[in-house]
Image 1: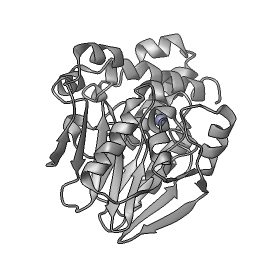
Image 2: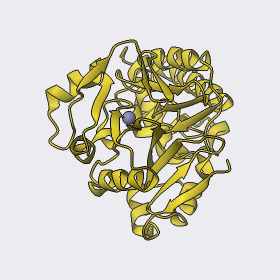
Image 3: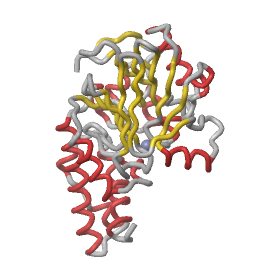
Image 4: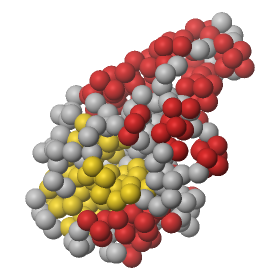
Length: 301
Ligand SMILES: [Zn+2]
């Protein structure tokens, strides 16, 4: 995917950092060569940007009336969200009007304070606000406004459509679609050529498949994921289709293991599904995926 860098971030990511996140060899190679953060304009658009910090990323859109930002990605690496605001200011002097949360997980949405200080209105799915209000993470800004099924935000010359497509990786996911640019920003439930892994722990595997089908029925060409795809590329409908097939394959395989009494330990050792060996996160992620499906087929949850 041809995108040009607006800002190359600070020092290159250290080998130590890579070991800590346990990246797959291909991803590790990639990460070792890239700066800590970068802001890129999506090719073929006038105003759609990706801000990446380490292995998390977020979309922002510069409209004629201000900026629509998304996930602050300031979890643990607290400086990331101020860097994000700084990067937006390098691109435009227009105010940051909105921050939209993709879902309730802290690794994507913690650290919103610099955006709040800049006067942004925070929007999330209704369920995200309920969860955040219960747990009260001191670093996560509570949404000001919520979305139930659907909401369209129009700011200046730009429209962003927010859709709840059902339970999937979480119970609070919003798909953000730019109808004019035919781009969606969808986080964690549509990883590009990546095995979901540990992040499946609180997912809804049956409903997830239906939600991917709903997204496939929408009109879009390119997908910005919440973690960079292989080589930093964006996703396509083909990737979404492949992800759906992967979920279906894993589910079918573990169902058989569960019914043969192999959940949990034996299934985690035996289920391989080697056709996905080339996907990022396969080696570390696969046992976690099997564990989640053992929860479903071997336990009923
Ligand atoms: Zn998540």
